[in-house]
Image (tube, rainbow, N blue to C red):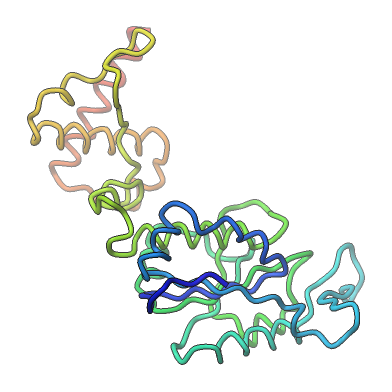
Length: 259
């Protein structure tokens, strides 16, 4: 169990067979949020809710096939115990390849909850009856399979924590993040001014904040057009944004013609 010295703004309960995987989660932004009383994390092991001497939580699947399936009963008891540990109601979120693809919009919605329960599955999956009985939402990191839901749970916690008020030193960082406005982030540069015969764009050294903001928006639009056109396809552009994107495309193609 990881808890702050005072009452917290948000509580996250994690149901996992491997609680030790979260031993290093209280570092960086998450650690500061815990210490400031913004975040409270509790770990629950389904093995503690078994009634056999081996504390096993998995059985072979009906119908045959490879692998094992997590049993419904110990997971139900673990979820029930988790819910009873606090009067604050919470959705149960199952981390599964069958879930919706995780988005920044979902993280923003989660960050406004007082409490979340994250269920980290293992093996070939979880008995469907447990999902039907107890799970409110299913989410996935992408179209690939991991060994369990622990890493996705950590990703969700990290993504949520960054959005908690005061969690970051500079709140402007959130507004400039990729996906915060439906676009990828613009390129960033720091010292030294020259690196491997490459220089920092002149506009970023100009001190003209309006020009810098315009350049960053243009680059953000352009990087999204180059790398994630699907995001542009579902995001209406203002007249200014369309103009900036058109400028980027012309400049990009002119540079490509020089090569």
